[in-house]
Length: 104
Ligand code: FES
Image (cartoon, rainbow, N blue to C red):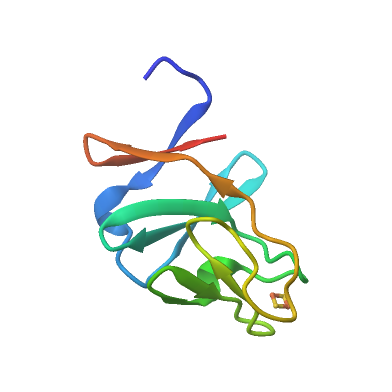
Protein backbone atom coordinates (compact mmCIF):
# COMPACT_ATOMS: atom_id res chain seq x y z
CA UNK A 1 0.00 0.00 0.00
CA UNK A 2 2.63 2.51 -1.00
CA UNK A 3 0.46 4.33 -3.53
CA UNK A 4 -0.47 7.47 -1.63
CA UNK A 5 -3.60 8.07 -3.69
CA UNK A 6 -5.31 5.14 -2.04
CA UNK A 7 -6.81 6.06 1.32
CA UNK A 8 -8.02 3.56 3.90
CA UNK A 9 -11.52 4.67 4.87
CA UNK A 10 -13.41 1.84 6.57
CA UNK A 11 -13.64 -1.82 7.45
CA UNK A 12 -15.41 -3.81 4.77
CA UNK A 13 -17.49 -5.61 7.42
CA UNK A 14 -19.01 -2.27 8.47
CA UNK A 15 -20.52 -1.61 5.03
CA UNK A 16 -23.72 -3.62 4.91
CA UNK A 17 -26.07 -4.03 1.93
CA UNK A 18 -28.54 -1.14 1.58
CA UNK A 19 -26.92 0.71 4.51
CA UNK A 20 -24.64 3.36 3.00
CA UNK A 21 -21.95 4.83 5.24
CA UNK A 22 -20.41 8.30 5.16
CA UNK A 23 -16.65 8.67 5.55
CA UNK A 24 -14.39 11.69 5.30
CA UNK A 25 -11.04 11.95 3.59
CA UNK A 26 -9.63 15.36 4.40
CA UNK A 27 -12.38 17.79 3.43
CA UNK A 28 -13.95 15.28 1.04
CA UNK A 29 -17.16 13.46 2.06
CA UNK A 30 -17.59 10.06 0.49
CA UNK A 31 -20.46 7.56 0.68
CA UNK A 32 -19.68 3.84 0.68
CA UNK A 33 -22.18 1.23 -0.46
CA UNK A 34 -22.36 -2.54 -0.46
CA UNK A 35 -23.96 -3.80 -3.68
CA UNK A 36 -24.22 -7.59 -3.73
CA UNK A 37 -21.11 -7.92 -1.58
CA UNK A 38 -18.96 -5.47 -3.54
CA UNK A 39 -18.09 -2.03 -2.15
CA UNK A 40 -18.59 1.14 -4.21
CA UNK A 41 -17.95 4.80 -3.45
CA UNK A 42 -19.49 8.07 -4.59
CA UNK A 43 -19.21 11.66 -3.48
CA UNK A 44 -21.54 12.00 -0.49
CA UNK A 45 -23.22 15.27 -1.39
CA UNK A 46 -26.10 15.29 -3.85
CA UNK A 47 -25.55 17.22 -7.08
CA UNK A 48 -28.96 18.92 -6.72
CA UNK A 49 -28.70 20.57 -3.30
CA UNK A 50 -26.97 19.92 0.01
CA UNK A 51 -28.02 16.45 1.10
CA UNK A 52 -26.01 13.49 2.37
CA UNK A 53 -26.39 10.48 0.11
CA UNK A 54 -25.38 8.22 3.00
CA UNK A 55 -28.66 9.28 4.65
CA UNK A 56 -30.58 8.28 1.53
CA UNK A 57 -32.33 5.06 0.65
CA UNK A 58 -30.32 2.40 -1.13
CA UNK A 59 -32.04 -0.28 -3.13
CA UNK A 60 -29.50 -2.53 -4.79
CA UNK A 61 -27.50 -0.46 -7.25
CA UNK A 62 -29.59 2.70 -6.79
CA UNK A 63 -29.36 5.39 -4.14
CA UNK A 64 -32.25 7.78 -3.57
CA UNK A 65 -31.49 11.22 -2.18
CA UNK A 66 -33.22 11.82 1.18
CA UNK A 67 -34.16 15.40 0.30
CA UNK A 68 -36.00 15.40 -3.06
CA UNK A 69 -35.86 11.73 -4.04
CA UNK A 70 -33.47 12.11 -6.96
CA UNK A 71 -31.88 8.77 -7.75
CA UNK A 72 -28.39 7.79 -8.90
CA UNK A 73 -26.73 4.61 -10.10
CA UNK A 74 -24.17 3.76 -7.41
CA UNK A 75 -21.73 2.04 -9.78
CA UNK A 76 -21.65 4.74 -12.46
CA UNK A 77 -22.87 7.82 -10.55
CA UNK A 78 -25.37 8.45 -13.35
CA UNK A 79 -28.40 10.60 -12.49
CA UNK A 80 -31.53 8.49 -13.05
CA UNK A 81 -34.52 10.75 -12.47
CA UNK A 82 -35.62 14.31 -11.76
CA UNK A 83 -34.75 16.54 -10.06
CA UNK A 84 -31.15 15.36 -10.43
CA UNK A 85 -29.51 15.84 -13.81
CA UNK A 86 -25.82 15.84 -12.96
CA UNK A 87 -24.20 12.55 -11.94
CA UNK A 88 -22.38 11.87 -8.70
CA UNK A 89 -18.62 11.55 -8.79
CA UNK A 90 -17.54 7.94 -8.26
CA UNK A 91 -14.27 6.65 -6.86
CA UNK A 92 -12.28 3.47 -7.40
CA UNK A 93 -12.48 1.12 -4.44
CA UNK A 94 -10.44 -1.86 -3.37
CA UNK A 95 -10.67 -4.14 -0.37
CA UNK A 96 -7.47 -5.49 1.11
CA UNK A 97 -7.20 -7.46 4.35
CA UNK A 98 -10.76 -6.51 5.30
CA UNK A 99 -10.06 -2.78 4.88
CA UNK A 100 -11.71 -0.54 2.29
CA UNK A 101 -9.45 1.78 0.29
CA UNK A 102 -10.73 4.60 -1.94
CA UNK A 103 -8.63 6.21 -4.65
CA UNK A 104 -8.74 9.98 -4.18
FE1 FES B 1 -30.80 15.50 -3.71
FE2 FES B 1 -32.51 17.49 -4.19
S1 FES B 1 -30.84 17.47 -2.82
S2 FES B 1 -32.52 15.50 -5.03
